[in-house]
Length: 184
Length: 184
Image 1 (cartoon, each protein chain N blue to C red):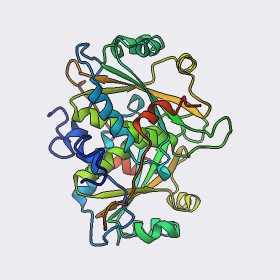
Image 2 (cartoon, rainbow over the protein chains, first blue to last red; image 1 turned 120 degrees about the vertical axis):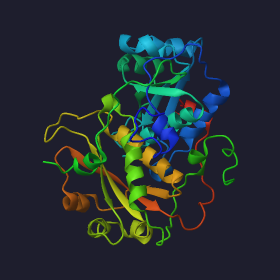
Image 3 (cartoon, chains in turn orange, green; image 1 turned 180 degrees about the vertical axis):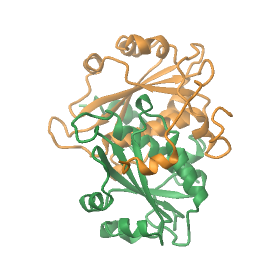
Image 4 (cartoon, each protein chain N blue to C red; image 1 turned 45 degrees about the horizontal axis):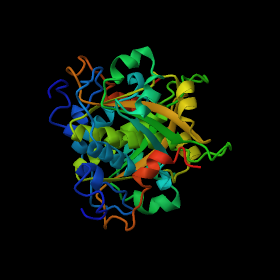
């Protein structure tokens, strides 16, 4: 891919080729083997003290679980996320039960790592992924009723991308990554 | 690698081969090109609304910046992290300036994703990485003095691993990833 010439031929293709599509091909099913590999990839992510603060609720079109999730999507995400072959609700364990005690100060950071591993495994399987927060958090939390201490964080649509990568993807420069925390 | 047979030949080699070494070879320098690719990999990670809440402070043995970081390591990490060819201090933008306003509710999650991209690019370059929190947070924050709103989160040692992967690496089962948030 030459969409972003500055990174082609440099960083690893799995990292360079990744993008978050806004359209999925409804014919792109995610089979059991692929689903298993996505979870296996997340599973082997590193975490603080091997705390593994992550959990997932997965569903595919046609499954009852899918309907339980889809009804809580915002209109903006329902337009495209329902066509994805897989929806993953991500959860992290922030607290120990009902207490104020943190399970890990790295719960969200480590969930992010596990998700990155999952989405890069998706790339390796030829699947695209798009993370989003456009859903009714309160409604979905009531629907799935995770234990005390656990919180829903994001959703991921995974499947076969339809259409090309968006034009004009942009990022801060490397120089900015190294100076922004100190720039005045 | 066959250390963990259950995952060999299944998930992508970059994900399967990754481990966090407790020893680095002091001869394993990280050159400018590799450093640039590590930052480039982090740069292209996804983030909520493309908020890119990450920043980095990098240093290598022999550089003045390295001494500024190393003096704040805990004894437990100083034993091995000083031998790594590169130390990266990771920062995230949690708040807007001095305010209580969140810059992004995904600051830590997205930093975790960027770090995962960086560490997998490291794997692609033949470099190992080990993230840790064993340093004097208050002292290092005073030393580096990031702007209001920015927080140091973790450090990463990257370089040439010395010795084999630790024995007995373990993770919760995939079944547990899918049931833990609801298990009673």
